[in-house]
Length: 171
Image (cartoon, rainbow, N blue to C red; front, side):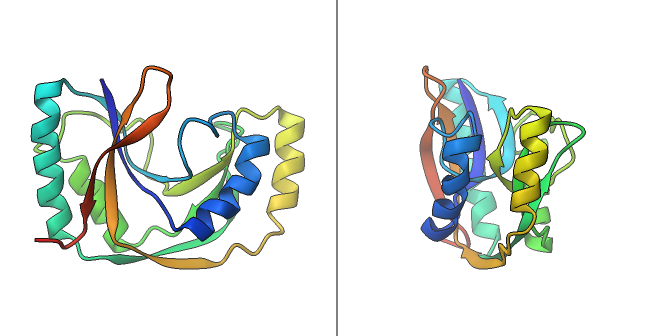
């Protein structure tokens, strides 16, 4: 089964992201707005309980931290994906590193870690240029505290759902 680890932002930020995702994100129906901490990885039913225990231990080591979202950006020319940029804080970087340690779970990251919330993907070149032009004028300035991380799994229909939630700094 496929799993991943993510942060779900506040309802306010999810609502803002969804106002664009409904029109411009082909994956809108499969997962709420999120920040991917660990890309998709495979695990058996037996392996996932160990992964969940390790994730619980990692979450305990991190205190809640501030998350800053600043503006709309794009991954072009690699892809026509548009996203809200999440500032890479020391805590976010360390959490990402901990989730990619070989003791946590065996999987490689495909790309450099660029924390973000996807708001548009699979756009044509013209549509990408138009939408990015509009969104780049937005003042997205948003700050909130991250208190939880989530272990997700993928259903047969491609949708993602929470397997378990872990509170940061919780005993």
